[in-house]
Length: 255
Image (tube, rainbow, N blue to C red):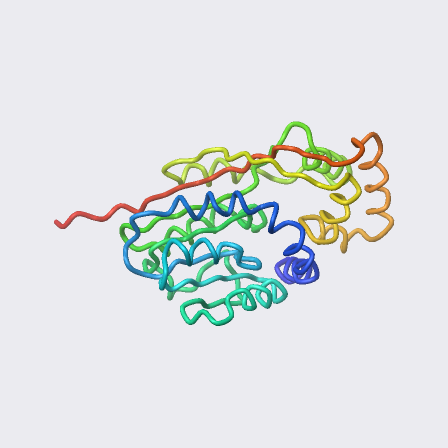
């Protein structure tokens, strides 16, 4: 599973950087700007992808050690290019779902945007990320919930895929929300040149890359035909909403 997912995101990396990173930027800013009053220590970014969080983190916390972790070699390569010349930034190719023991209670913050919902056990991953926080540290995680929108390209795609391959297990959502101190919905507008442009980006450079590789060209061609049927003409603007989890690891008072 991990190898297949890593290959899919490596194949999608350049397209993802070009198409989705600019469109996801408002949520990245939300996640980064939620961090404040941090203790000493590095900021860890699991599922960093091409590391779009880097600019905001560097501006808010100049000189702070920043570490990005991602399973995909292609994403790590682009993230390393983004981090080039920054001595305080490290990008690691590895499993972000279960952090290495070296991170336990050592990090000032953990921030992650749109990686949690891709992991095989999001609730366990969030526990691992929380365990990396030192006392006083903060966690800021943004993910796509089961229902991102009622109407729009994400909703249309989800319905078509669900009809063909079945619904994904979303029982983990209650478990991750229970781990947070606070959760909220964050909605921002997003636009696409047209329905076909969105579909091609979503299946070639987005979340459906792995399914497209597994099911083949005929499956995607059929899905594309159905997706474009009755889709609105011209530019398509919608308002997806993500979920934002916040946690502050309280400082333990002396006994």
